[in-house]
Image (cartoon, rainbow, N blue to C red; front, side, top):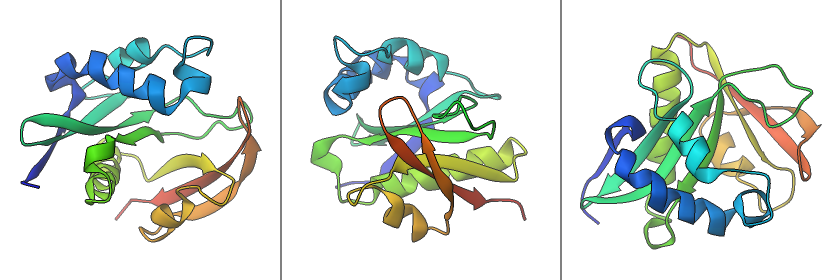
Length: 161
């Protein structure tokens, strides 16, 4: 793999349609035909530059290969915390190459640039969740909360100096 560039989704709005198709396949319960989500609409809303929601994309060899967003909306109605990191996705051909770590780092840096002292993420509460990947990057557990389809484990990372 060549170099990977992380850019604002706002600079690559042509990626919204193909990313939405990936979202529909990856999260069919939410973004699928019978799900409540609107992948195109969610991605369009994440086309901000200086305020939330903001989307970032990973580009390798001219190909959009991943994305992550910073949002204000909580995955659980019980939580009023923000910003939330969400929609972390890397296309199958580019997984296990460090792209998710680069996207997470870029989202952390963006949150810090916007003046936030911490950032939150919700991961599955089961054994195959991303919790360990976030824990290796210094994220700490906050608790387990209900979300739309299941319980999620909420993690936070302090990003202030």
